[in-house]
Image (cartoon, rainbow, N blue to C red; front, side, top):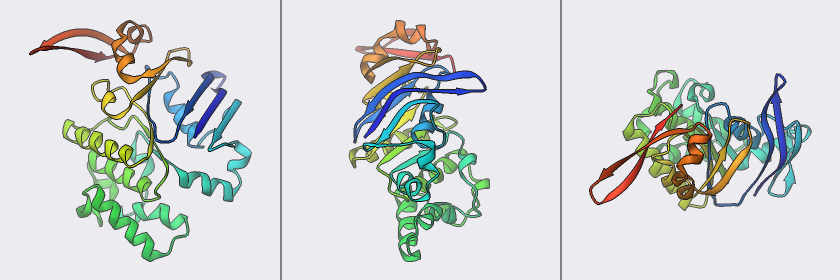
Length: 260
């Protein structure tokens, strides 16, 4: 579904992505991992068409995605209906006067009839258990409520791919657990999930595969999430964790101190 070949991107003469190669198949759940500033968020923006690569090639469902193509309204509309992006900071994403209008915005941009728009909004409110927020102003919501609303905005367009930038950031443990369960539900329903995360305690529950970046903005590992988490020396080398052991009952578990 997603093919990234020799992709590089620079910002203000600083390399942010350096010759990135990766393929993501339909239905996968993939975590991008690495220390702050390694390029994870930039790659997610590129996958979502918010920025375009300086060099290399990005193909989505076999079709090349370029800056020029994204300027074409017809291509851009089709592309953005298939792939949805949940920003790390929900305030970046929310701008309407009510939660209802936030969730309705995407379907309305798709040109759907208002009857269908209303159905989609109500379905999303129900799915995320936020019916009581329907008439609220997003600005006054809690962090968890904003995150749920932002996810509902993307889900309302029924994309094939859901891209999330640090979705656990700023959430209390209860909301983090809710989000893990919700992402598992989406994955089981056939959605492709791509996310960046520092949360090593929960990543294995939501992503089967992990792609690790180093501080030189390159991919240094692409493997099963469980296998990556067991490679403590590599995680330390890329400055992602400090590591120590605790013994709980019968089993031995790794616990991580996050540098970020």
